[in-house]
Structures are given as C-alpha cells and as structure tokens.
Image 1 (cartoon, rainbow, N blue to C red):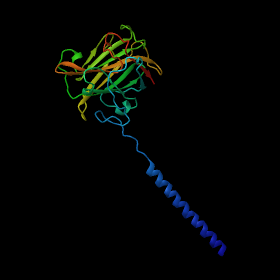
Image 2 (cartoon, rainbow, N blue to C red; image 1 turned 90 degrees about the vertical axis):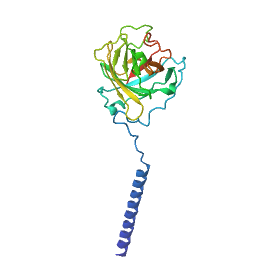
Image 3 (tube, helix red, strand yellow; image 1 turned 90 degrees about the horizontal axis):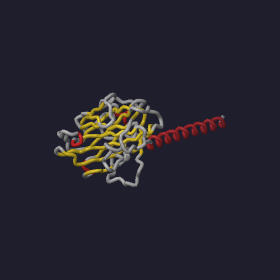
Length: 253
C-alpha cells in the first residue's frame, strides 16, 4: 500500500509540474506576439506603416531603367476599395523636375486586368489651384502609357497620355481614347492633399502575368494659375507628352 501511495504522489507531482510548464509556455507566446500593422480601410486614412520613406532630388540620368510592379485586381473608381488597392506596392513619385520637391509629395499604386490599368495616386499639396484654362497649369496628374514597352521616340499605336485635375476632370492627350477611360478625384480629409483614381484602357495589348508596358506619371502643382512644381516617376526631362524614351517599365505581377 505504501508503495502504491508513493507512486501516486510522484504521478500527481509530475502532472502538476507539467501544468505549470504549459502555463509558462502559453504566457511567453502571448508576450512575444507582434501585432500586424493596421491597413487603411477608407480613403483619407494614413498609408500603411510599411510604406517606403520618400526621398527627393533629381534622378541620376545614368539610371535608364525605372521599374515597378502592378498587381492583379479590379477596383471600382469610386474612392473605396482601399483594402484592394493596398495589395499593390506604393511607389513614390520622387523625381523633382521643376521647383521645390518639398512643396508637393505623391505616391501611386497600380492594379490591372485583361483590359485596363487601374491607378490610385495620393498627393500631398497644401495649395489647391485649378483655375487655369490649361490642365498643364492646374493641380493635376498625368499618366503616360507605352504599351509595347519600346520607349518610342515619338507616339505611335498603343502610346497615349491622360490627365486628371484636382477637381476630377479628365483630359485626353495624344493617342488617348475616351472609351473605357474613367477618373475621379477627391480631397484627403485627413491632411492637405487629394486622391486621383483612374481606369485606363489597354488598346493594343491584353493584360496578363509578366506583361511589361512602358509607364510614367507626372504630378503638377499649381500656384496662382501657373505650375510651379513638377514631380515625375521616371522621366527627368519632362517631355513625356512628346516622347516616351524616358518612361519606366511596369510588370504585371
């Protein structure tokens, strides 16, 4: 009997020790758990904390290839779908072509499907100005498309540019089509600035994985009816409405 009693005591002690070790491990697991960064759910909220840190200045002219990636997705151009947009990488428009780079900042994201590119641009700009007659002298965003990715010297079939001003008015540049082009602009309620969203049709190619197209984006910041500051993603010469030699390359991922 004494042997059985001693055996039961040892079993009980081992069980208690096992319970204590389990509780300690659970406590350590909870302590070391890290929270995922919050992703903005509505337009106007802050960008995810893992967005790249902006740097500004003239791009090194020896850097010929500026590359980015577009993710597959079909958002509505309505100021919603922030979670869908945030699946794509944010790219800063950091090449200061004219004026003071610190006066305006911008980032963009790109999605795609078989028929279109979808762009969402966030511009930080404290001086709204859309009074000029020309879109070139308004707060505006220009999109440049080179569908064969050959960086053509002059615009040819499949090349086009589009513009959207801060009031949401769309403009068709060389080679552009109004069929399938949709755009929207709205003020950022959280900080001085605005958003532009656009759906741009693909005219000569079909969107597919690993498809590459030439692409660039320009931000015009106007003051008193005249453009004072220009940022561009790839081209350093600001002649992209005439030649596509300086565009970057987007790969559909």
